[in-house]
Length: 364
Image (tube, rainbow, N blue to C red):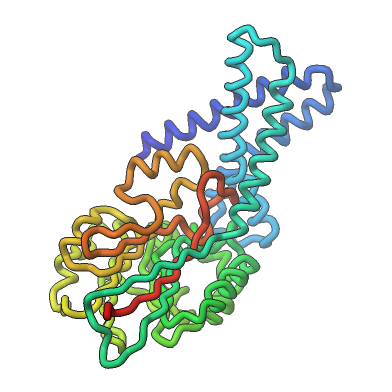
């Protein structure tokens, strides 16, 4: 893992050096003082991601921490697309296609693309899936409406104002049950307490309850600190545990893979009545064939974000058996959310933020 981060940092700094060099060429006619000022601002923006990571557990004014986070993480995507556009224009020059405005056009294209990505991120999709099971719900229980979300990443990126919109979006569905597949918290619980986000989470309403499992970011934030924060909300945290709801649904909540000692799915299935509906919450969608073989009726996962931006979606589509959306595996119905919100840069390019609404019923 350290080698991976060293490579990542090297590529990031190399990309920004390339942008800086091409920018200085394009702006060579400007006065020296302006060029120095732009250079300082450029490298402050480039290195702000480091400041964000180093200060994530330090309490500071919300505006300052949020600005540093937005600039630092947003610059990652700015770097990606600026480098891609600049390389495209430089290739044209190598092919002896005369072109003198590569940097300016790259900047314009990147800004327009990021504007589209921000708009797309701010308008998550609601995906409705009807699932009819061969298994009965308890008694004459009516069909169940489940709202399932993942990867809100509450913190300096997804702030209280955004959380308020998400809570409203969820409650407007009038769900019977709310499921959260991890990464509710981003990198630290500090900004959650600063903005008193437990107040908004306490507005969630579902008669059958609100349940979540940890994601890798609950561990990054500190699993004990994350669990303490969740205790101040109506959300029930499941860590390798099973809950049977009044209508007979058996809800299995797996701890995240970050816990190398977490129980296996086979262990958690001990004592499960396979004649009744089984729902599995597991943050990371690995080994989906195990869920099918175990007899899970519905699995809900997140984690992938489907890469958030192109071309990273190609990477997640390659890594995961199912990187997003709904698919039926034999008798198992599996949904992998791209995330209601996202980590870091507030852009969705080639992907969509989503919320799943399941209508769970019994076949007649």
